[in-house]
Structures are given as C-alpha cells and as structure tokens.
Image 1 (cartoon, rainbow, N blue to C red):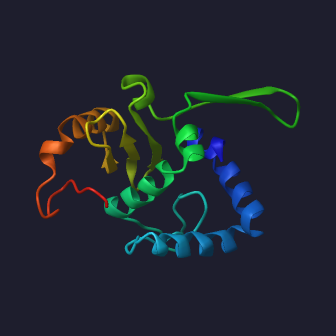
Image 2: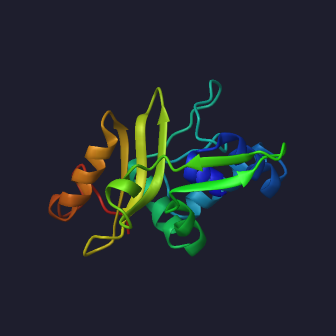
Length: 175
C-alpha cells in the first residue's frame, strides 16, 4: 500500500488487488462498489492502477476524487503513508530499494499538503490532496494540469476565497 501511495507503484497496486480480492477483476468490482457507497456517482474503475485501458473506459471527476481523498485522509494509516517523503525496503534479491514520493508539495509546503499524484498521456498531471495548514482543512482534485505544483500551491493559497457559494464554479469542496 505504501509503495502505491508514495511512488505510484503499479506492480504493487496489482499485487495488492490480488491479495485483497483474489484477482484484479474482483478488486475492481469492490472498488466500484466502495466508490458508489462514498457517493462517487461519476466514477468507474476498470483496473487497480488507474492507467488507461484500451478496451474499457475508466473515468472520474474532480468532485468524486475529493470525496475519495476525504475518506482516505481520515484513515490515520493512509494519511501517514501519504506524508512520507520516501520509503526503503529490501527487494527479493536482497538489494535495498528506495522510492521517493512523487508529491513535490511535501517539500514545497512541508507538513501541510498530503495527497496522491498521477500522470497519463490522456489526463496529464493529476493530483488529489488535502491541505492541513489551512484554517479550514481543504481537499482538492486537480486534473489535466501542465504545471501542477504551482497550480496546487495557488489553489490552496486562494481556495477559501475562490469557492463560490452554491458550488457552481471551477473549485468545489466535497462534504
């Protein structure tokens, strides 16, 4: 789990899915059930990695991803993992492996912004995270960014003023 959250380890995501549900396909069914239970009405998972699939369409919305992040950050174990700068462990060959967190906000805003990064050709840079340094805890999802680290910093710095009443704007709080 830690390798998935710290360094987007896709092989670890598949191994985790198989360990939890017996197969990645069964895990995807579980993920989709849990997503609906969280209120993620505009999300469909087709694999454990989040990578594109040529045969099936996988999608989500910024709002749904903030719902998922709120749930994940409420679990102290997941919250701790998302805040790790790096992890080290021994591989099956006995060699030391170190994975560095892809979330550059951990260095730019230490102790404040935890989250999960992503990138594909189709989605560009994505990020879902929580700002613990804000007066009010804020969660955001950023999709299709070309300059994610400055976008994330700006959104968290201006988020309280930018959230329109009624939730009809480009930045919307979950919950």
